[in-house]
Image (cartoon, rainbow, N blue to C red):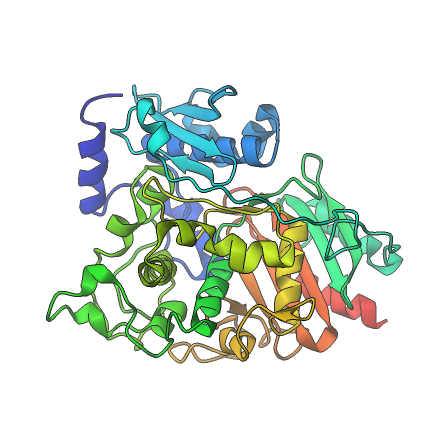
Length: 467
């Protein structure tokens, strides 16, 4: 690695110019989530190398996917840079990716933590200092019927076969899209399920921003436990200096994407793919609007909510176990990893790896008002809170709305009242339709600039089942 790599990365970040944005390509993707143009550009070779290291690491070690298919699918968006092929170190469970300019980005896998991108100035000898916690899987019978296990002896609903054919063709619900998995759950059972080659019941993909909905669920659990309070200032220790205007930002402002903090679509890329830590990325931006007065989609708002959770827990091992002990393993999401930075902060705005089956369990938890197998996991009233419009973004007929780390579909054609969804880049959706007792999961690896039309697909599923 060139000796000035670390300073180059930091200086670029501080200047707000880490990425050389390809606005035309990025705008099409950004429009889906109302993100700023440039939010999906990987034009900086170092960031692209980090992207390739991280995606190869997670897909190979967590999801057991082969390198040739990872290169063809997950890494397709960086193909134009013609970077060297990532190198998998099977013995040490590392992936090294070269940026073509003499710099190497390393991503390291640990079996309970997923993959972490190392900072530019870290030697591999420091791998042993990465945060780690043991978390044994609870005793369970994987052959039990879904959702408690992965058995599924229910026959598929043949009425949905044509819809699944259309979804996987790449010509419908978004030209050029690449669907990885679809599950339709009605009445608590799977009535339709299909996967692209290379993906399956236990092989999944990065959630991208669907992670925000999972992270919000952790915040909800902490609120139910009395650890956090929605309408109180978010307990961010970096903001405690007297006179810091950010002390006025409440926890609910963060969940509503209404913090008022400066952000742009690409300002978290150094953290996602360059080895920057969450705290220096998320807690150092300035206030540019009154908290609660403006809606602006921002990865940092989610990360700050998780920063508050870590602070009030005041126990790093408990924090690292919290998602698994309090949510994921309680509802059988055993094939889900919440990945961390090198300082042990969850990158919970995007960096979660999961499967379509686990997302179906997550959707069912919300469909059942936060109750799982008779146990209340989410506090009473939480599902209503996340599915109501954020005060700074009132609902508008014909447009998607936003609640609390969930998007709202219920103002769109063919979509019933009360429908809401997690949403992630490249088409990751867990859509909850309470009036139909329905959950619709779609995961994808859509190429840059392609957009999966989940509302249209959900509307067609509903119409088909009603006929």
